[in-house]
Length: 181
Image 1 (cartoon, one colour):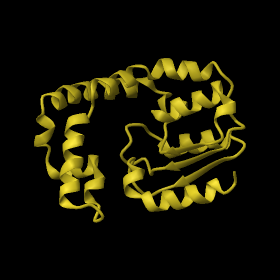
Image 2 (cartoon, one colour):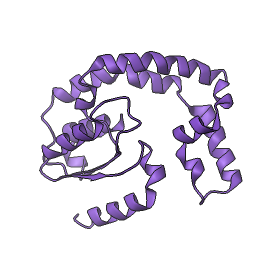
Image 3 (cartoon, helix red, strand yellow):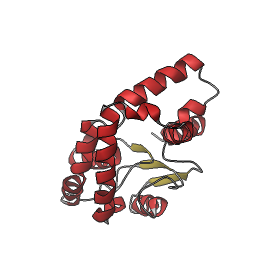
Image 4 (tube, one colour):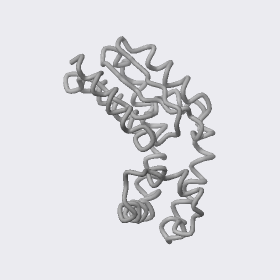
C-alpha cells in the first residue's frame, strides 16, 4: 500500500520527488473491485486478533516460509532467522496495518482528486502476482506505468516479498536506473 502513498506524495509535492522505485507497489487500479478488499479485510482482522494473542507462533512451517520467505535465505545464520521470526510474530498484522486497509478507499479517492504524476520517473519491481489477493496484479501495475512518461517495470518470477526473494537483482537494477539521474 506504500505505492499509493508514494504516488500521492509525487502528486502533492512533485518538486520533492525525483523518482519512485516501487517494490511490488499497489496502484489505484489494484483496488477497482473493493469487494475483494472487503472480503480480505475480514480475514485479516481475524488474523490480527489471532496474532495479538500469539497463536501465529503455532503456524506450520510451510505457511511460515510462504509468509516469510527470507527465512529460506542461506545468507542468514540460525540466530538471525530466530530473530526475524520473533519480529514477525510480534509485528504481524498490527492494528495499524488493519487501519491502513480501512483507509484504502479514501486514499484512492484522494489520489483521484489530483492529476497523475506522469512526469515523475518510476521503476517498479513487479511480482508474478501469484500470492496476491487481487487478480491481474501484474497487468494493473504495468498499465499504470504505461501512463508514466518514464515508467519502467521489471517483472520478477517470485511472490510479493520481492525484496527477500530477489534482493541482489533488485539492487543491481536500481543502481543502473539511478545512473540516469
